Amino acid sequence: MLKPPYTQYDRLFVYNLSLSELPPLTDPDLIGAWVEDGEAVLFFHKAKKGLVEELCRRTGGSLIYEADLDYRDWEAGHAISAFTVAGFTVAPAWEEGPADIRLDPSVVFGSGFHPTTRLCLEALLGLLAAPPFPIRTMLDLGSGTGLLAIAAARRGVEAVTAIDHNTLACELAAANAARNGVAGRVRVRRLDLRQECPDTRVDLVVANLYRTLLEGLFQNPEFWHARRHIISGFVPAMEADLLAALPARGLKFLARGRKELWCLWEIESSNK
Image 1 (cartoon, rainbow, N blue to C red):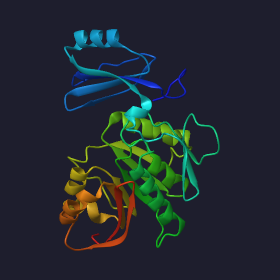
Image 2 (cartoon, rainbow, N blue to C red):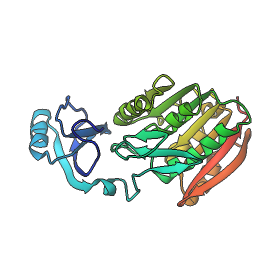
Image 3 (tube, helix red, strand yellow):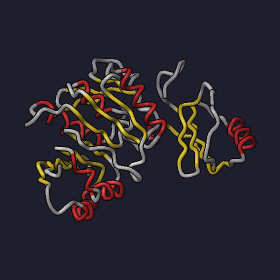
Image 4 (cartoon, rainbow, N blue to C red):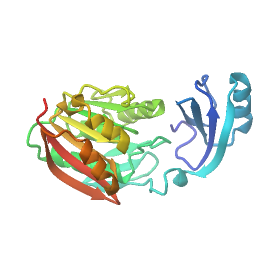
């Protein structure tokens, strides 16, 4: 995450280690770190090879690879700049000008500026603008920076739970919720959706996830307790497999969207 004296991202110095647990790191140039499946990935504003070598000596870990990237390369060419959907403007924390939400996108998946997130945001804002029923509660699965949860709270949803498996994403979503004045409405929870399905007895579930994770959730009856689902994170070539994973009864397609090869479904469920 951004911490003084840094106000935006430029170069990323990335170190991938074979390490299942990280000791506390207080380096002022540290952006963030992930630990998952026996590996740790560290991100810095400056080169830190000496620090990483010392860390490996102390912990018994080893360096798998290192990289020096432009931040735009980390984001796979997606522009991290202000955009507007349905009159709602989202901007990175460092960009000047009017905005409804300002985000620190950091280095997590789900930065908030990906086409799938924009698709979900458009669908979400459409529901909240003219809902067929009040949306008071919502789950944001794969929340990343927390953009969708924050947008829902800003538009009046009373209680939103933002869920991600990545610890850094959870910390970032909580910080972004506080930055945008909705910390009281957005609860952030770390959860591995591969192992556990959260309580979906809410008005709306937004699931912007990768295909295999969606397939697993689709086959779990507990996933379908919400009144409505917004689902994205997949391309047209994946739709046949995802359709085959849906329950045979109790679902109604309300809308299907597409943006830059990415797809979205809006589904109503009667599986209470």
